[in-house]
Amino acid sequence: MFVRKPAAAAFIRPISMLLILLGLAALWSATAQETSTSEATVQTVSLQGAIGPALAGHIVRTIERADGQADAVIIEMDTPGGLVDAMRDINNAILASNVPVIVHVAPTGARATSAGAYILYASHIAAMAPGTTVGAATPVTMGGAPDGPPSTPDGEDGENGDASDALEDAARQRTEPATPQAPGNDDAMRNKMVNDSVAYIRALAELRGRNGDWAERAVREGVSLTYSEAVEENVADFVAASTAELLALASGRTVTLGDGSDITLALEGASVEAVEMSLSTQILTVITDPNIAFLLLNLGFIGLLVSFYNGLEPVTFVAGLICIIVGLYALNTLPLNYAGAALIVLGLGLLITEMFVASYGLLALGGVVAFALGAVMLVDTDVEGLRIDWPMVLVMSAALGISFLLAGSYGLAAQARRIVTGREGLTGAIGTVLSWAHGAGHVQVEGERWQAVSGDNLQPGDNVKVVAVDGLTLKVKSSGRN
Image (tube, rainbow, N blue to C red):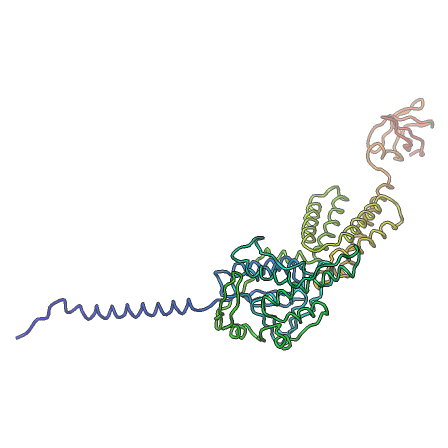
């Protein structure tokens, strides 16, 4: 006797197996998603060379965009310094950031001097690679010292203002009352610059818990530290030879963000994304190099000169205008010395005058000298990489002077050249008598028939020379028979 199993029982085992497989797949997916979401992301941005407006803008944008996209930002720094406004922009972005900003002085042989030292002090975590240095933060020019502690980026108190407010309070406590000084006193002005820089960097040191006494020495005495000394002096947090080592050593540390909240870093094994400059920023970085800006300005002047000499030829005219506009825009982003700018204008004026006045080259020489001196003085900073180099000054001054001299010589030669077209060009021309009677007749000059008068006894076929033009009548004299 056989017992027949219900038909539904045949489907139980396959359905059970399917449910088990679906459960395992869901578990694996959840585990993978948890692993993916738990992995931290770090963005790195390079700060190489002198700190100017274009580079500072790139750093600031990277920090601002990292909020919600990354767990930390690493600034890989190797700089001789830069402009105070550019440095303050970067520091303000760091102080207001809700994403931890780590400054890594790297690679081996890199430095964080002048403005770089201020940025290192403003960072949440400061690290240095072996063989690197930090310090020498003494202001060197009128434009080289910070002009006080940074304010809230939005210009008013807000949710991200706690760090900036703390910095301002610390700076006010450290700043001594200024003693009135006589105008034009260079020593007094330098003391103000140094004292202001000291207050600023000590405020940063107090905010981040770093060595304020050494920071003051770096400003007043220009001292520097090696990577190991920086860690011993509590200037840097640790030494890291690579990004992976940096992330491992930074993990577990607690930092205070721009909104006042504390966060413990968990960055070991994080994925690293490099943030590259956009094409527009790369172009802006190139043209804001003082040497490139100066070159563009000179090429623009030469282009306009060539255009005027060729009757406002449109291609060189437009190219010259573009070069001048771009050059002026680039120079406008740099700290300019107005005495230098005035000397450049004077030099150009003397060179232009040389084109119309025969001074035997004296005006041109004075113009070239004034132009060269103005170019040297034009950019008011001693920061390496933000100055117009002497070779560039000499080459472009010589090129500009030669261009104006050539244009002037061509112009004078053109004025001295005999006119060979129109009625004025007929004077001195040779013609042939066609008909003649009683001191008047007709002559052929340069293929044209003219009425002519003469005091000479002429006959048809005689050669004559035009001595004057009186309306439609030529005054001629005999130049011999054919």
